[in-house]
Length: 415
Image 1 (cartoon, rainbow, N blue to C red):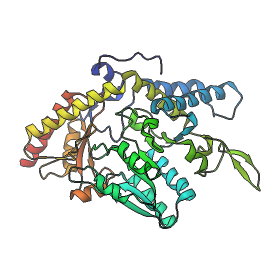
Image 2 (image 1 turned 90 degrees about the horizontal axis):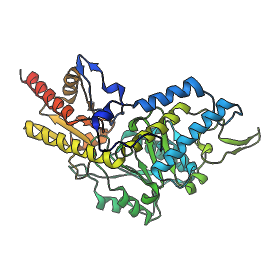
Image 3 (image 1 turned 180 degrees about the vertical axis):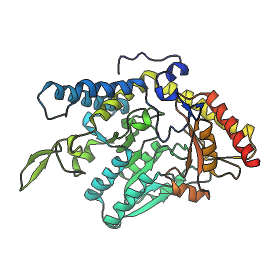
Image 4 (image 1 turned 45 degrees about the vertical axis):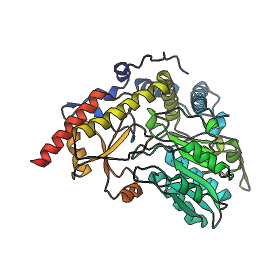
């Protein structure tokens, strides 16, 4: 925990002052940023921490006896410990730094797959996955002869848990599922999914990219085997992420990449590998990214996940009500009972791209398209959606501006 004071009660205007990017004009209009599921904006604390590293502490880590190297190493490893505390990992060396969620998933698919997957084995994913939790497993199946199984979803974008139970069998080697759908906001019942898998001694990997910005995560309480997430979605830098893994798995898995820092001893005849976490962190890492992510953790904790959750739940409810109240041809796509602060929708028969383009001209940033979840869109029979995704620095007033913008969209297409 940093020296930041805890922000109570929730004061969104004070919080917004911490985010420089929110205070700009886009096409002559004040920016409304509703693309947080793609990437979040960064508070000054994160920006300043990165600037300080480059201005004063820039040096390579883990390899130098001089002052700057020791300073940089201390800051980088302190960030690892902050993440350990944030997710309640047993050991700091169970926290591996990666480039992001995608690399974390690929690391598991390669390394876990190389160690334990054989022809005829099965990997389970869900119908709600981002492409980054589909393609690596397909590639692994091509390498190993394993098969991919998919948990189906219903029309509300909720997983069919009975079907999931039926997929678990003696050939299942891993369940790899998203925690919160980036496209539709569905919060999957991951605690129950982990329990069901563990009853058959099947490990579970969670894609937590959309979970860490919104909710408290406790890997020990969940008993999850692997968890991946990205810094840039939780108010930290791009190009940095985390793979948490239980020590018992990481110790047995072979390295993902070879190079400097991941070795203990090298000769032309044989190489022995370094201890955790360095075995999986070859080469010079994204040092300022790790330090910046540590600052983002400080910032999140200064607000508190309970306050974040309450504020974002209000935004989700208000935004959904306003869309359905003001328009009789709005279709909300993804109506799960448990959702994060994401609203995907369609406006009549207007193409999502057209809606998003017009809203952009009004200073309102939303995401349009398939959101790297083409199987979801195929299942629902649509080309894509308009997605408004909220963070704790968004407001009801900004939602009102989006409602007004949609009115202009409809007026333009009507004329």
